Length: 296
Ligand code: OGA
Ligand code: MN
Image (tube, rainbow, N blue to C red; front, side, top):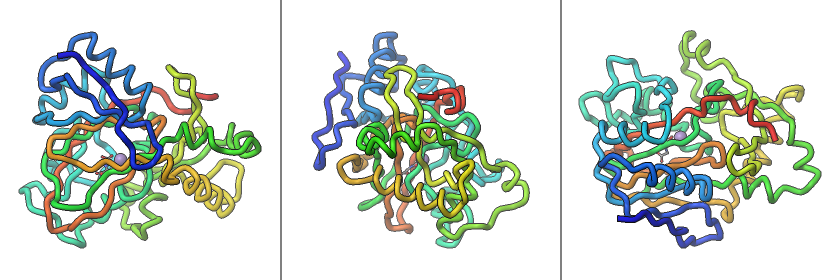
């Protein structure tokens, strides 16, 4: 098998998702395959692999071949109620017994934050690099994941705005993003754990040198700006960055594996019938450094 990556024929004009064929992710990768995946990620930002029947252990082995993992400390699931190890994020609507969470379950309401455009773990000092999401069970309809290209969005800004955003520092917290949906049911410990962290609004990709807007619903402040003005500006930037020409909508098939680069994309989940099972597992590579160290 030889690995091949071709741009996914887009409905819109977004050409930043590649479909990968000729690779079996359930087996150890060759050095050439690892290199090809990293090169593909640099070129595209989102890679789609079909028919990869990974279990959790295989997903972990595969992910670790690409780089060090981040721990799943971004959710509110108590350790004794987790369905999987801290090396995996449980992106499902299921409890520890495999039952669909009740509509008003606190864990479900918290996870609805994924419906807002975001970049994974931007609320951590050291945020995420790649996210690797494996679809195990998908609902009959809905539940797409949409991606937006933050390099194209940055490039399309007018010169004045490019200049204005270049050195701005935002403060990111899950308290802000969940707050947008009216979720403020945080414990004192969660408020401390998710105190705002600083991230650049424009960052440079270390390999390609391209600049991108580092936006997320977690961003709730801009340093040195009055809060309402910062929020209004961040809204404008988000609206700009998620115009349809910058967006790829992924329609899941069971055992798709999608990798995205959180440094250059945002993503969001789309609604589905909450009585149906949607079971996805995410491994996440750490960026190892803060965005503050990836200045333009
Ligand atoms: C994630 C995420 C979106 C989805 O796994 O980080 O935001 O569609 N998922 O489940
Ligand atoms: Mn996410």
